[in-house]
Length: 399
Ligand code: ADP
Ligand code: MG
Image (tube, rainbow, N blue to C red; front, side):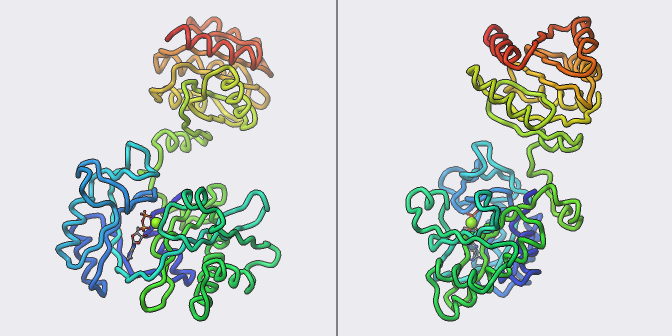
């Protein structure tokens, strides 16, 4: 689960991380009012969307010469102009894709005089099984580009969970950022506070880009991207309230209501599978047969008819889907129940693409009979290889 920059900064501030003052605004008037609560003389108006690269982004409605989603303003009137430009318009950045994201919230924050920008992120390093701090002197830039062009400028510092954050970790971060003296102390302090925040919120990622040194020698977080481990959210009711569902993929959101694990992908074949492992195998075998999956969808072990119907509707709501492959092993879930769900859903949504179903397990014959007698053009398959071949053939035939 991701949150907005302003929410991330408020959260980090609670852990003692230095951030500039700022206020969220849902309207132009709120944005202008924020200037009265800030010291000035420089304000920054920032579009709040769940994507980075806002500064260099472009608004669809404003044309190529207009400024992006992070704007400096010297007066309340300039804040008004920036807010008017941004609210309700669509910001396209390197992270949003071509469709862009509509800006519905702004953050009006204190403008600081930047002497230098750094990069500092915390993430779970799967290779080492530890929390890693990733530090670079190349802040304010697209970190993927830095990693590609100058990998030697990216330093990774692992923290052993058994010891927690130690002073030497702080010194390593300061050294990676090439800081000395008081700024080195500040860097160690910021790193330690970020580590506290990371553990305390069950974060999956905290990315600070930039972490800036101001002209008067202060280290400050100017941009923060924070994401939490969705599986840990049950113990963070307060953080759950920060969720902004308008930022999430509509279909993924719908799927989460039914507790379905659904992820939209770029291919043509919709998949409905039970069990993440079987879902992965199904996606692999579709690729092996020359096409690509349109989604990952795990209906789970204990899915019922309602869940299957919901899953079916979600797959079919995707206009990219040219065919559907259902691959279910009826262990806990019986094949006849699945078959009833498939038939009910297919009738309800007016199935217009080929459907191949492979059932195996408890009550498999009863399930196959339900499909065969449904009056629908369902193609039965006997095993996974057969199913993948058939769906690819059906889609190519229909094209
Ligand atoms: P994004 O990464 O989405 O483009 P940032 O918050 O990183 O958005 O802003 C882009 C750039 O704008 C920063 O690298 C920094 O140079 C400048 N900036 C952001 N916030 C401030 C601020 N409070 N004061 C001065 N400059 C800022
Ligand atoms: Mg940034």
